[in-house]
Length: 183
Image 1 (cartoon, rainbow, N blue to C red):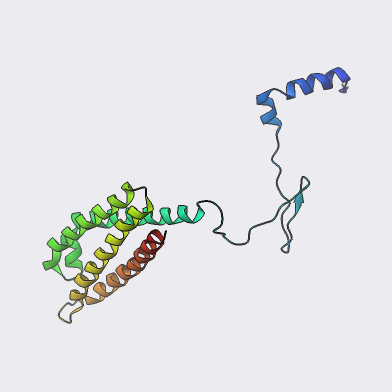
Image 2 (cartoon, rainbow, N blue to C red; image 1 turned 60 degrees about the vertical axis):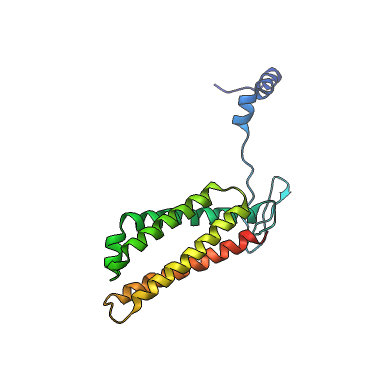
């Protein structure tokens, strides 16, 4: 049985095609041809160019990334703070600094408060103030860890590794604070 296309069949199809649900179902995605050797393809009569790098132009792109960066630091603050609160004893013993467990718990409370402060704010200037508070906290952490580098501490190698990690996080905090207060 062969299908014959008649004028009435085309009219019937075109009227059905105008129905909203059917129009969406019939719409096919128009994708650009793949770019080869740095030349963009042409598809559906449109010249499409491909981005080869991340741009910071556009509305809110930089601000959005800085806000994501600050939120990540806020969550990091909460995670580390809770770890310091809940596991201060084992943590300080692992570092060979068991006499510092109360201080580490207090640092945990400070870190958790900083993280909550960062996540609770929606204005960049206020978030920047909380991130600056993280920087101050990082400096106190570094000062406390530096006391564990003495030759009498057999676990000073572990302290050195943790000190390096805290220093790296401090750089991230300083960078984020600078980006937030630059506005």
